[in-house]
Image (cartoon, rainbow, N blue to C red; front, side, top):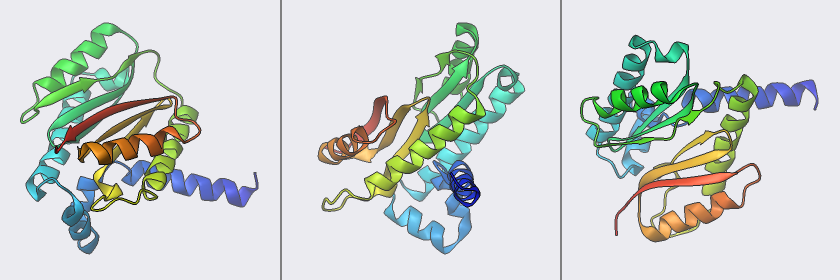
Length: 195
């Protein structure tokens, strides 16, 4: 790999980590935000509330000291929370789940935190790249009324979590497209079906 390719890959990964899975953050950004929210099946209020839920849970995990011992990602979509990452013990995993369940306005929690040492920077970079590949692949889906930006993609140690408000046909197309990608070891579908 050339030095230029390495820096390009690094820039793409950094952009994905900063922006990937953060559609609510785009709400603050003006014209791009309007386009993002306009395509989202959630209301603007729900998009903003999902961002607030994520911040509340992350803050509570930090206040409880869990983030010092574990690597836990928090993703909220339509008030359904996904906890992913690693915790060194079942007690920490359970405590993180309890904190998420007790957070204001959370409808459901999927605690997918694995009992393991926190993942390495290399693993997290690989997961960020996998998320980018999945998002790019979803742009290839040609279905009436399908919009790839309606799918929230989270990757953790080769497992791809898919969230969104989709029809069953859309969800099947998303799953099929994701299964075809190298590096995808497992898919967890957390969709809310519209039909």
